[in-house]
Image (cartoon, rainbow, N blue to C red):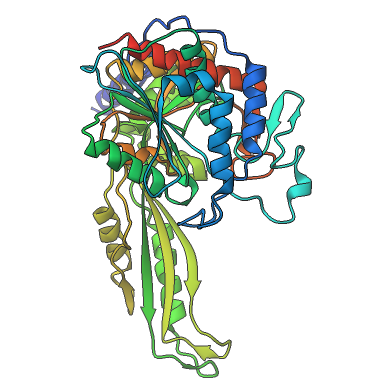
Length: 495
């Protein structure tokens, strides 16, 4: 009897191993979405594009808070607008230019010959974040001089996001100068205040919606070709098909207060601390079963190490281990779940006074698999048994995660093909943007919103994002300009 049991157990183990290996060898491999043959486009000089980026960086279009630029501070934006007209004469001759009422956001329209075709919307933004005071001397090139050193353009906005603005204008100018006339209308939107919540983009999208404009797709910043990808250790193109939502809650702890010489065991601050620890230890659940995470992992599988691929292919067996691995790093954790970040604390006004009311501000970046209501329910459930804790309603302006854009159809196929070409054949995957872009507003007029720039970005480049030594390579300015030209012409060839 025992011998039969051992034989049965061995047979079960063999079956499990066989299933695990079969699922591993058949997991992923095929690209997500289709591909297209890319068209020939006019030659665009990377050196000239880099020089133009250098010049654009010198306009100090800095935003600090909502409402910027304040009245009387619009000079750098207006100077940039004038410079664009002088620098790109063919583009301005071909397009009509508007400034969205009540903003400094630019809206260009290149009218197509076939009004039955949905227009293409390309987006970027003019404004940049400030440079931390006292760090200017740490830069290789001065932050607002646009120095070109050893093949890189240095300066605030080189990566975020004047490189895309310049690349789009280089593409349109070269196409217009070559005599290209689009069948599909091309719309360019350059927001003026993306870094402070993007009111210009919001108003611009509302204006387009009022005109009944429904783009075939919108393309904004967000992802590029990463070299290497943190998932695979190899070069990989990533196209943002969704971006996280944003909600901030106030967690309040009420207590008796009093003199610090006679503290109770569970003062308001202690109870608030318990609530913060509870939220940290009870994160919202991760979900690997739905796009964009499931598609990202599938598309990445071909370049993954065998053991990593085996774990992902057999989540039924290794799910806990996979979740633990992703949760171990801030970037991995942000990819797979709604994140929880206590950011601000307030209590007593004096060191020897116990507060009657302590508060914590907790910011959540909402995953597409969750809703704002899910976040509120989660916080109330986790803190519900802690005495004296109250949870506020979401603040005005809270937003759900954007819808997940589809990966079927020509729009995604064009972007994936451009990414493959710019990345020298690197695999391409849909991905989740964990920050916020102006693209989130475009979901009001099109279900196909993608966040992608055809540049090859390294980990060193990424350290300059909102930091010191922000830069963009001259070679990338060629890729970006060429890539946007390919996008315009390739989308002109589809229905």
